[in-house]
Length: 184
Image 1 (cartoon, helix red, strand yellow):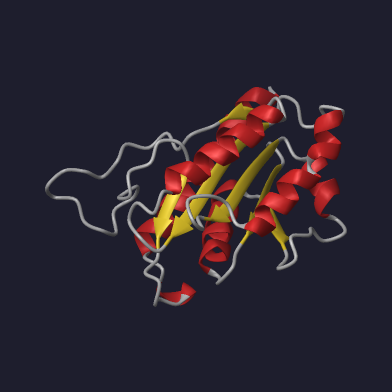
Image 2: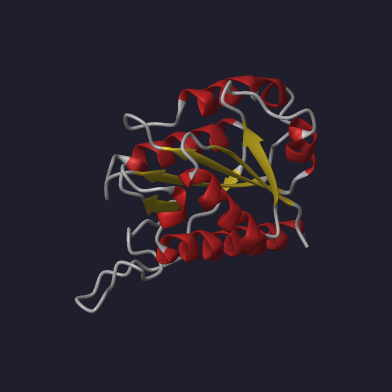
């Protein structure tokens, strides 16, 4: 079994719920980036020991939150020694609108993983895009690059749609399976 870590920032709690679903699917340890953009004391050790790192951030203004960016900048220390080279990476995001430029956030996470010489894993999911599709179907938002969720700006984290959370869970399981294949 591959060791998987989910590192994420959540401003209002929606991305935290998504991170919990991803971690459940992957059997992963959660590492929360705090409101100041810092990791807990054990956070770096968990990431360094992981075979796979799944990154999550809300999409704010078409990109990751500043707190996530602070973490990314701080990851230059393991980058310098290529400590995360050949780890499996993946990403997820949430925003208030159906599109919300979430793909820009996933591209940022992908680029960060490539900077670390990582191996990117997408969703492995077909989109729910037929006429019979329902909003609670898995991968209704239709992403291949990483998991996406949509939470209306006036909704609480408790109101997140079960289909988006199931997508996150299935995505987490896929990343863990990919990492296990690379681990040997």
